[in-house]
Length: 206
Image 1 (cartoon, rainbow, N blue to C red):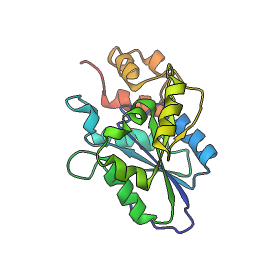
Image 2: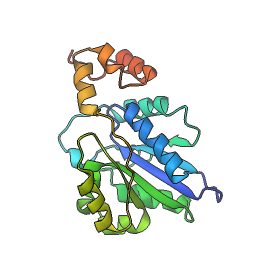
Image 3: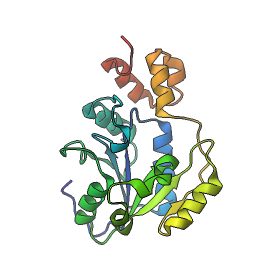
């Protein structure tokens, strides 16, 4: 990431394992772009997510390539290997500090699902993180929106975007892929991402 553009005033960071990236992720980014008026959005696949110790995930190379494919049609989106090329676990604080250093005058939003939003107090250097960015919660199917809004109020500098949620998860998609249920999986994946998964034989049991 060598870019430095003074015209960029609003940035979103969208982190996660993206294992695999699905249509819900793309929908979130499109909605956030419109609602927040973003100039740039960085999609940052995590290398070693601290909250997923012991869980096997697809390689960083594969997840990065799937993200590049899925988000290729969004002109303001940049898929970054920022965390994948860094040693150790992937801490959101370090990522935000790095991007803030490149765009010191920009307002930074951190997009996340409700599970991460509700546990943000336990994140690495959470108090310092909240000084640098605005957490933005995107609801999931079955969420208690009242509790999410209470959390946003408790954090103070936080936003809750009341976007109608999709009943979709990477866990369920991995189950479909493991069963080689391509037709059902295709409902949730970019066709080019699914083709990549099949070519690389990702998530299959064999």
